[in-house]
Length: 113
Length: 114
Image (cartoon, rainbow over all chains, first blue to last red; front, top):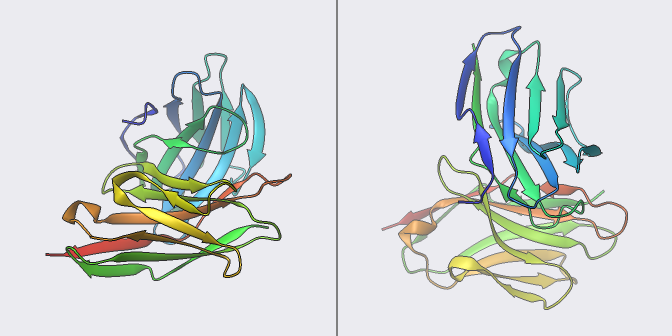
């Protein structure tokens, strides 16, 4: 158990809809990262937040957004969903902003029908 | 930009045999390098990391990796494979100065033959 929790574990929705994925980092960790894992694109870094502020951005679509709240939990919002957004979404956390050792959550499996 | 290349998307070894998973990096300066493992239906777990200290790094579950600057490689090895090692393994790289983004390779699925 990494100490990172993600909810929900599974999500099934329809094209055009909006969903919110939630992540709670390990106790004491200030950085949260979001990744998308799909068969065709592999593991892609989406975005990083550190202590409430956006720190780094990766291959995140404009339809996706994230935020980190004062209690350090984070939410990833996916809107206008397309079939291609079906993937496993991971959250990870680390103690600092420097992306050293990251601890991964179990993931949220999103299926867009 | 840093990148890693994992040679072989699938590797099969017999139980008890040597495990060798290959990773080559591309970076203008020696980066930080990581190996993560993903068991079925689980998140990624850190196996080991290289952060410019000893070039031979020992990790969990009997795995180790050697940083070779001359070959720009960071191959993962285990002397004797166990059935529980069946998983997907990801090599990752992070820059040292000014470019600290973590970039993952495409992964190698390890199958253990009984």
